[in-house]
Length: 275
Image (spheres, rainbow, N blue to C red):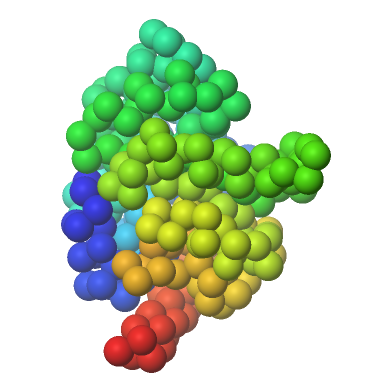
C-alpha cells in the first residue's frame, strides 16, 4: 500500500486507529475453543466488529509462532480475511543481516503479503536495507519504544551527544524516505512527541501504548500529528479484550468507536484550525 492510499483511508474514515491482533489462547473467550481454529474465529469477529473504525491491523507474530503450524495457518486465514483497504503490519521486530534479513523480508512481503514489518535497527543498515527494496512496502523501525526497558539504552547519551533513539531516527532517514519508512514511537513518552516530530517531520509514526499501557491519545496527537496526519495509533488489549463473554466483539466495537470518534474530533480541530 502506498502513502497516498493510506492517507485517503485516514481522511475517508476520519481515523488513524490500528487494531493489534494479539490473539492469545489463554485470553480469548472460552466458548471459542470449540472451533477448529479458535484464533482465526476470534480474529474474524474482531475484524468484523472494528473494520469500519480502523485503518490498520497489526498481528503480533509471536502469538502465532508460539502455536506452530496451527498458528501460521490462523495467521494466513486472518490476512486473507482482512479487507484490502486496510494497512496490515507484521509486528515481528526482525533484525538480522544479509541473506537472513532478505529472507525475512521475502517471508513477510511476498509469502504473507503484509504491507509493513517492524524492524530492530541495532545491527544497522545491513538489517534494514533488504526490507526497503520492496515497492509499496514499509519498514517500521523501532525508534523510542513504550516499554519500561526503553530507558536502558534508548535514552543513553555519551559526551553530551544526542540520545540513541535520536541517532537511530536521524540516521535511518538516510536509508529510507517518508514513502517507505515509519518509526515506532511509544505513547508512554508523550512529552517527547514534539521532539520526535521535529526529528522526523514527514514520516509516519506507529504509536503503541494507548489503552492498556496508559498512553494518552490527545497528548500524543497534539504533538505527533503532522500536515499529512502522520500517525497510526495502535490499541491491542484495550480493544480485543474489552469483553470476555460471547459478546466480546460488541465490547471491542464500542471501544473502537470511542477511539475513532475521538480521532475524528482531533483531526477536525487540527485541520480546521490550520485552514
